[in-house]
Length: 299
Image 1 (tube, rainbow, N blue to C red):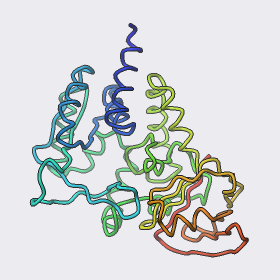
Image 2 (spheres, one colour; image 1 turned 120 degrees about the vertical axis):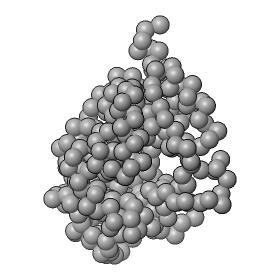
Image 3 (cartoon, rainbow, N blue to C red; image 1 turned 60 degrees about the vertical axis):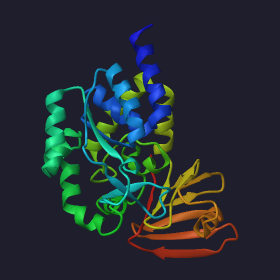
Image 4 (cartoon, rainbow, N blue to C red; image 1 turned 180 degrees about the horizontal axis):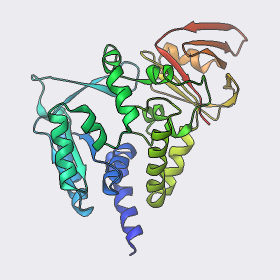
């Protein structure tokens, strides 16, 4: 068996066991692109240790679990941790730090423990411009659900048609090459990091790599509290996106009133970064202006 076949087999198993996004992080650590940090329930730690041993990777596990506060409208996703001393430890997530180098692993672990955000970000492979953007906007994002999508959009010069390599919003649907918030949707440094991650994944898991690229090219409507919507196969023309032939992916339940409205849309037009106009299938127009929305198109 060739080494490529061996690695492909291990990582394919990990996709099934831990998900594509977690596997992407482990793979990146294995290739030396970064130190990875993932969160896992206690009952999966032994399985992870077994896989990391096969990959000859070093790891360190947090002594105490963290508890994720689920974001409203995002399908169980969480961008915040909180303390819950009254909750059983097994219900929390243990943070696992992973690297192919012991020194890098210890530096990353200690820097987060000591609150050294910049050094920790560097170990995670985050570009300096994105670390700086994160630090400057952290308090503002934390006031809500600690999600940076509207802030990233506001910091992006263009109004639409962003660099698809930077579509980290697709992570809500299980596909993304970035594990951090880029400083803008056209950041060259984060796009370069995403391309390196793609090259790695494509060399071992080409089917999954192709799926990631496909979903990163789709337009996404983000709302802070009423769901996130990916329009697979939609047609983009300048400021307008036509949805008649699109397959809708949503983070809200099927009985959501907002989902019903989105399903009845014919098109969305971007009038500004916080201004959108909608046309439904009956031709009725409506408008919304809010700092809690972001419509992102990619090419």
